[in-house]
Image (tube, rainbow, N blue to C red):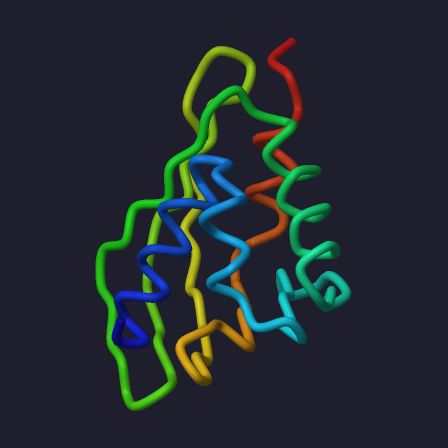
Length: 124
């Protein structure tokens, strides 16, 4: 797979909570960071972070709008969608990935934390 195909396969599997497919696409020493929050390292910490995030919603999908790859670096503009409290919340995200030897070694997502916090607050 190309770096772009690797990232897209990972995003699709992770959003679907298919960790058996997603985690092998990560390097053993992967670094994942939702910017403004501390970085996590390795498969177990990435899985725990994703499980914690996705446990807050009943469904999720990550829609890529634009993407570019330059060698091992992949960047995408996407909307991460989460079903919370019976309705969908859209979160604009910019993702940066580095793929080494066919596996994601670095994953950073940039987004507005206030958008997330407002979406997590139940209505009323």
